[in-house]
Image 1 (cartoon, one colour):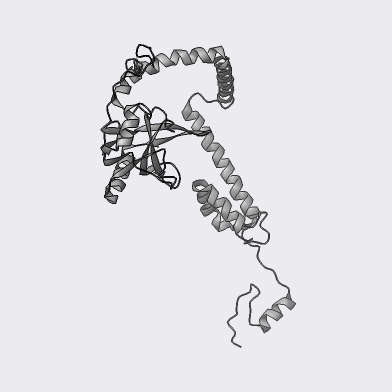
Image 2 (cartoon, helix red, strand yellow):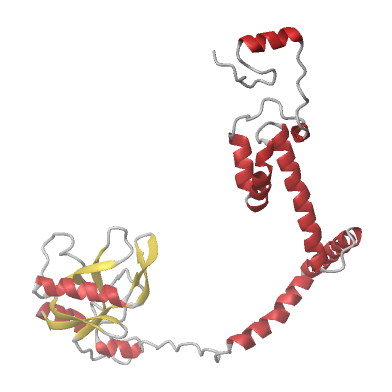
Length: 314
């Protein structure tokens, strides 16, 4: 190739001594036709490092994931240590083989790809199987291996972030925008119309019950509650679910725990066969008048006409 050609390979590459395997955050990937992403957090890096340390051996760098495929897998290099940095999980290279060195320095292999083990639910990276030299990494944004190849890549400048705005100012700025949007789509007129309608109904209700304050309203509500409770107790008495001497107790229960009173009325059997006119119980019983024949029978039984025993001993 002509050395003067603008596309000739004039880079003098250097072998990498360390590789940033995974960045913290969401890592996007494309594998065949499958696309997705997975998170990688500092605690995940710690778990991978613990697993690596537990094995107590160097981690292989192979060619095209051949060690994963259980094929003949000569090493391209070896990783001696994993380190957690501010960016992510960093691998320290022990050495490269002569074959890998030639391929990397000649630009025949430019990228790498970690072979990862995930948790059973597929949401967390838990271990690192190996790292491969490849020209088709599944992970997006993988940097070039050789240091001098990075010089030819144009760094992407992070967009300048707008200055922070205090929460109070942000809320004040958003309120007019929200009101303008509501006016544009007709929400504000509809809300105002609904509020005016409710205000008119409330005003009518107050005038109807001669209320001029909330205290008056509360008083009217208490009176209405008293009427309802009295009706409940009266109905229970008429159905024979209460006796007259239970009236005070029933009124107190209905006033303090109406749900409990209703449950009592539903569950209790009739206590009085016919209690439709409970006020009759307030009148004393009429004096008993018996005829001579009845008195004779009472006398034979040793009873008085009123149903009491006489002084006669049988």
